[in-house]
Length: 211
Length: 162
Image (cartoon, rainbow over all chains, first blue to last red; front, top):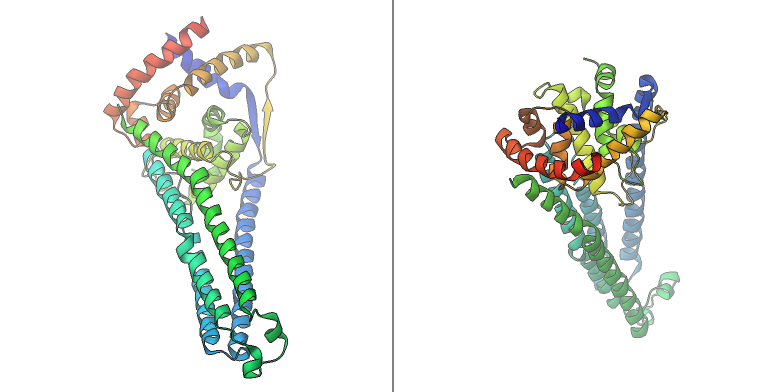
């Protein structure tokens, strides 16, 4: 008796209001949303390509401009590490959220957990694939810069780039602080966002499997 | 079967699930829009390996579960469309029904997440076999779980309804 009463209460709940929709408008809006998402992806890709090309051109020019061998080598590494960074960002972006919601509840939980763990791992390892390559190549570049006067190097770049020990220390410390901050931010995101979500999903999975 | 027919035949059940899962600040209609969007997106790939009912319930529950998990995450956005509107019904009978529904919803809310999902499907009058096909656990497992869940739910709701 009670069970049927509960079913009635439940079934009547959708009568507390009316859902109205216009299917043709709905389809139009859905298509627009998909197109908007695609446009955003194209914009983001374009932005990344422009930034990476500009940076590569800059360091390409510095290979020509800077007269110190190891700074030239560092510029080549900078170009390579920036290329690698763009590649990693694109690979990482392929870790998409589970898109097929038509799997079973249990499979969906497994997919969600996998996605969250990948996201967590990605952020936790930012030191190795993001910070260290850029920091290392930047440090090599700046610390390989010698005295411009000793080689007769003049011009804007000779004045702009840090060539004295104190300037190099300041720039390096600045890069280290930025790098540390990036690592800290990412680890914090894992601790505050992904770890609790992973635990939550694991708990739901455990509860589902228990009798 | 066309998308329009699927939507028309399943509006109530989708909305009931969304209503059960919606937690402030997410409105049931937000979840409803997202579920309908996902159904529309996946409709072309529906191969009738599962029954349409099972397929609809899976999408509805999975979308709602995702929304619940990621609630509060800044980058989690729902689809926006003006093409779906919710018009609340008015009248004294509805107020009483609404109150009884809220009591039931509160009791379901006290259950563990998967238990709440199973009881929602049970209240939708699905068989244990169908519930198993939606949740991914065996029919026997559903039966065992339902025995315990039913007892918990009754203990919670009986004094409130009387």
